[in-house]
Length: 128
Image (cartoon, rainbow, N blue to C red; front, top):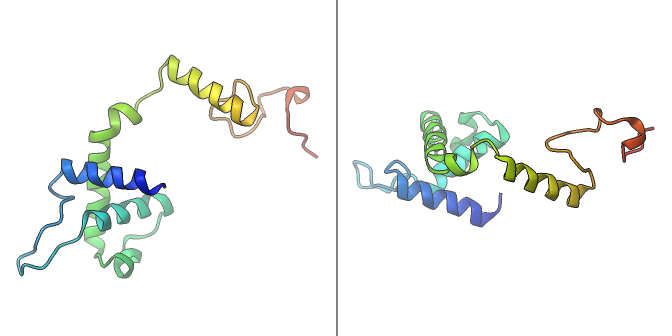
């Protein structure tokens, strides 16, 4: 993930939720930063690492990592769901098809992993 995208997500969560703001604990020590909380959630989602695997790297306990993950998912859906997590409309599909064709040279393929639905003579990849 690009750094500017990551920081945009962190800032949006920090402004949206009290949970993603850094606060002092009962002994007036600084709590976990928004960067730590977002990093643990994204690492769990991206790599499928168990929550106790992050305790030394991010100095965060297992239960806190789990709470970060659930809070992260909830707030990302609230903040970005309408724009990025919706079904594509006809304009979106046409734009994606055009971008894919320009980049990969496969016309009319959206989300395809292979060209199994094509006839062999039309498949641009020669399988041997």
